[in-house]
Amino acid sequence: MIFEFSYAWYEEYEPHLFDGSAKSDSEWQEECEQAMRDVGEDLIKSSEGWVGAPAWVEAACKKLEEKGYKRIEPVKYEVWGSYIVSEKEFAKIVGKELFNKAIKHNKKVQAELQEEDKNAE
Image (cartoon, rainbow, N blue to C red; front, side):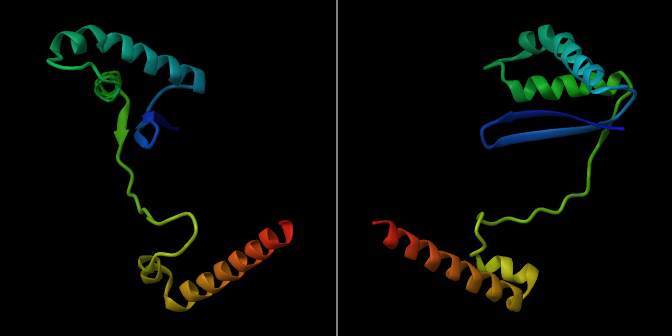
């Protein structure tokens, strides 16, 4: 089974994936929390500045590796863009024809919404 231990704060998200021996979600959670407790004293003593959550999670991940969990680095493919398709970079991925159809569709939706706004006034 694959397990995730992540740090998140607003837009920040740092997932750490592991393969290991935990049998359930609650067991995995306890393993992560115990690793956080196990590394806390050393992390605080060795910190020259602020003690931060990302460093604490990373230290706990190393502790999980010592316990036999194997960190997994997935092969990723990420698509960047706004929620509503509008960037020309997107056309490089899906092709000009599909991109133009999406833009045409979005313009139609925008016109319908503007018409609804007019009628609501």
